[in-house]
Image 1 (cartoon, one colour):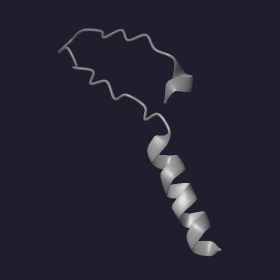
Image 2 (cartoon, rainbow, N blue to C red; image 1 turned 120 degrees about the vertical axis):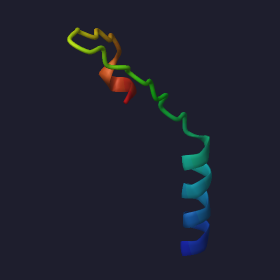
Image 3 (tube, one colour; image 1 turned 180 degrees about the horizontal axis):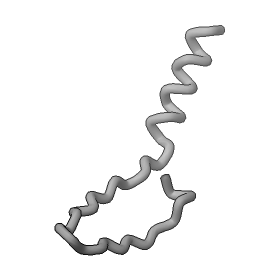
Length: 41
């Protein structure tokens, strides 16, 4: 029973959408503006 629950949870975690990672490059002595949705991660 435990093994099947572990396998099911692994399958579900693999199938769930992964958040995208965005790099923000700093600008010396400047401002950087980035708009996004916090609910996306």
